Image 1: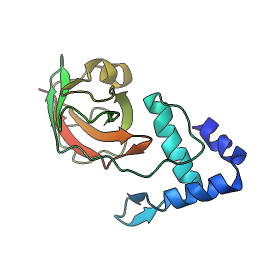
Image 2: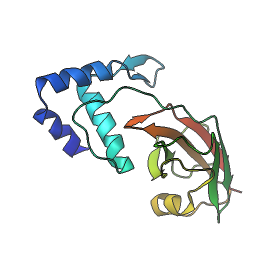
Image 3: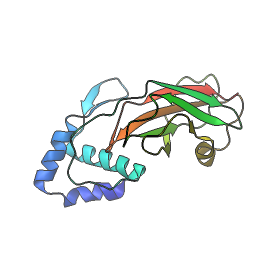
Length: 172
């Protein structure tokens, strides 16, 4: 992230203006439910941070803004020995990947998670389901029976993420 942040200073004025126009098309919602758009710096960093996470090259000029279609459903299968997520639509369109986020294990009564971390990026045009046991265990430890895990999936295309779809599941 620091590399993309400092690379902003190397852009031309015309590139910065293009990123400002691009950021004005990206709508986000804050924790109070209020919508806002991104400034050029935030748009540049957001797109390129996503591109780095997906293994794509950093870009200096924005592409045509296209928000990928969000997932329609996520169905977790979660035990102490397995962790897979079935999703629709499947397979993903060409050049589209899935970013999987998860939170640490919580008590079963918890209804909100504010600590979601990227744990896996699928290959382009991946088909359902995705096995996340190894990725999750490496980040948070093995799932423990009776704990709740929050999971979010967002589709990725050319540096832009869809709105995430959030689900949770108690480990069986």
